[in-house]
Image (cartoon, rainbow, N blue to C red; front, side, top):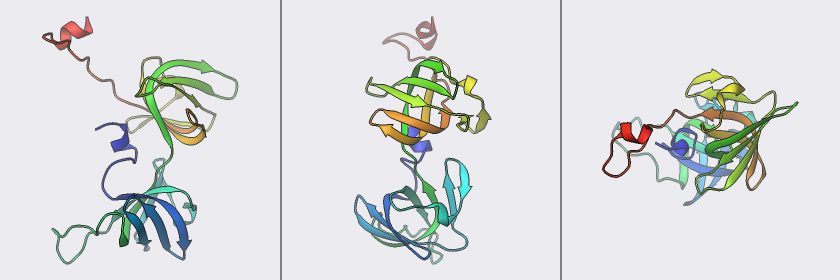
Length: 190
């Protein structure tokens, strides 16, 4: 599973942009149309691995909605994705993200500047601050875990097409070396 699978871009439920909030109901613009999302006291809300409340969701937020499964049949499918009305079991705010391999880390007085080589080879810039949180998997770590060659996913606020101010940086597990054609993993690591 790639970074998107763990950090809100893929998974169960529908993704859409909040276009309206009325009482405890959200209206989403999705790839397939318009979806109405009803919430209840049992709906849970998450943003950047932190529990939030309904009132923290704003118009223009991108969210993933995991629907309540029908109680009439445990095998019945969820509602048609991206259309109609859905009762929400869980809503996750999907933050803008940049991902790739760390090329360099420059330490500054108010935070670090991390230069990342993105999936298409483009250089991306991630800035951090004293409030940025760092994880390796599910374990909270410090900024020192971000080293040259590490693969990261940074979430926060876009400050440009290829720049992001990070609230959260996740250091991804190391990938095993890919063996050359006809070789072994041991020969690739040598």
